[in-house]
Length: 361
Ligand code: SF4
Image 1 (cartoon, rainbow, N blue to C red):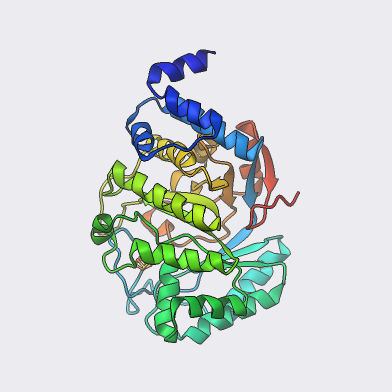
Image 2 (cartoon, rainbow, N blue to C red):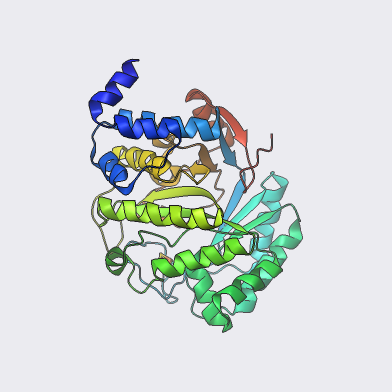
């Protein structure tokens, strides 16, 4: 009753009514939520949707992250991961080395390997096909999730194939899912400022659409907290929601706040307040995406834990290796027991899941 009074006083009562009734919120509602300072009210409204969709548990996955190389032909202004071939910090992993790391982690119980890398100028397409085949050969139960849409276009260029032909060739080699990276913010104004030369929003969406129509799944993402406006965040979420209406192929949404240290773009780090609000607004806008996954690698476990009451229902991965965010000085690692403790303390039951969010325990 007290909560209801607070919600009515905040001026967001009509959005709360929509959430309770399972009705879709508009772009204008999304903007009003972003502009409001009643963060606890926004979280409480998002939690209505979170608990209806995901019940009283929060999940996590045992997986291994792998970066095959950080060598990249692009120079995204927000990125501190990509390197040129001549740089001392540039690296490449061979297929055998990757297979060995994943073999060891399979023995520890992982069910997924998650692979992304830079847009390498000279590794042949055959390298990627061999990588997927060799990893998949380790265990048919291992879910191989790899490549952003941006990498897929790069591989298509290397292979002299179309994007759909490239996806089909990788699927035939054993690729199970593609990753959601590279979406950043869809607005071309923003892309020209933070990742000039990268694929457009339409290309990113078309790659995921094609993959979904092949019967496969992927995740969708947002990189926020740099130069984007709140209107551009809402536009991004609506475009993801439209594709999900069309294909139903996104399993989850994940956001990362921009980590400015050591990047060309620079600037300030997004706050925990912004992360909680962005999470809650995304939960409300993306009414057709079944799961919201935490980004504790950028936010730290404590904010991710609080976000379980702002729309999140998944703690993500145990992340046995991470190279993309750590060069910006953001470095969190967590043990399974710590993830379980954080979930339980927030009042939810910790559950292990697979890549497709099926509960395993
Ligand atoms: S974000 Fe990706 S494509 Fe852009 S520079 Fe970094 S590694 Fe390369």
